[in-house]
Image (cartoon, rainbow, N blue to C red; front, side, top):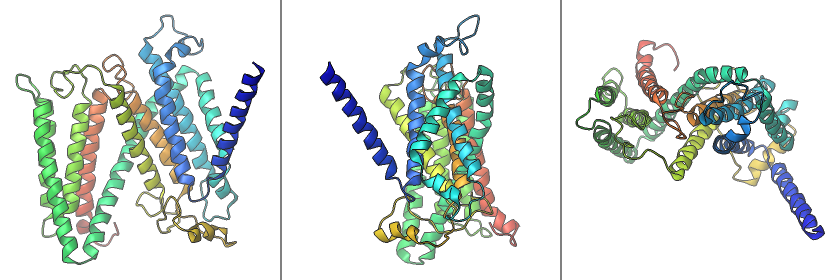
Length: 413
């Protein structure tokens, strides 16, 4: 017994020392990666608690104070929302603290890049305290999360448009036949993928013998948007390129698929999952990993001062890698010279705050799929309409990005 106790103590001490060493190795260049890791950890905690915490929440009197105990799914959703609320508060507090930082001599710069043990304990403490707040606070957070999630989806759309136009301009600027051919090949591949994907949508979501007019409208309208993108881009006054039009067309087709596949599993027009009422653990894991990658990319990209999403007063530096590639890069921050920050710390944390709301809505099916989707991720009619609305917003913003320079030639876009 004594030997086992000593062994357990040694293992615990080694684990603590390993965590301290790992946290202490986080430097300026790897701070954004560390924040992304912390956010991914919060998503994993939300998913895990959704699966196992329902019996515990049922036994907590200030949570289960109802005359009639709700279904298990209510407690699973509540667990996700409480973790998300803690995550939201943590990143929002950091966003407020980091507001107005201009250079790396600001004392708050060290808070952003260091003190990781303290920040991890604060994050865990805030999440833990969320299980003591009244249900009314959680319900209010659930309501505002739907609006916050919509803002985050708009952020993703703007980032995609910025990326696609930058990609096209970069290849055109090379002014070589090879890159012009590359533009054409990529555009053709995107259109082939778009029309092939659309054919599968007709096969999966408009089964014969059923009245699937809504699904048919979504698919046909998506194809209309794809043709509209190409027509507008190739208009003589626009003098655009097929690459952005083809990529955005493919993305809109994916959004259509994402929306239709989120229809309830017992809906007769959802032929993709009509013969499978349950989703395997592997599918759930894949869906969660996809969510993590999407959220992390958006948060990191939006936090950069080089993107169109940065506030007007943010420092305009050049993009730098998340991790250093040479010793010179690691040593340049050691110079005792005030250097401007390379991205808006406050806006970076604000994106994570919105991402916390978005991930909660994904894991709970936008908090209204209980009873129709069970433990599935991002399933239910609200999820369908969110995807379709995002598609329409993407189409509108893309067309505006093409015509705005023509309508307002004196303004910079």
